[in-house]
Image (tube, rainbow, N blue to C red; front, side):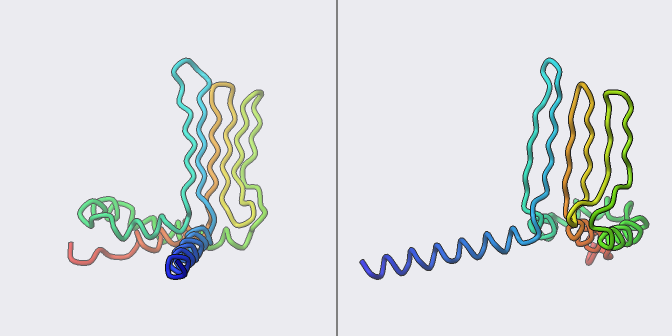
Length: 145
């Protein structure tokens, strides 16, 4: 019985540490709601630390073409993400056109994009550190392809 309790405690501790490690950078949140007949409602929450890790498991042949096309822009995106970290609370776009509203800003170290229109709402929240990590990985030359 004591051995079973120790095993459960070890497994529980491992799960807590794995969860804390995975959630350390926060969450990428994507919410899309379409207010029309047959409209979609997509709410996706992904641990931000998982995205750069998953890129290591994607086959190189699948990423090679996209990386080649984006290679010129990755250093620019990396520089932008790095510079945005200097502005943790800044508003870059705020357009209010009647019943439509678009807002792009950084908030607590995350890029936040909000689009509110009568027929749809789109909200995206992504940590800047994740954007920076992904641009570094995609900007590196492919090995062995």
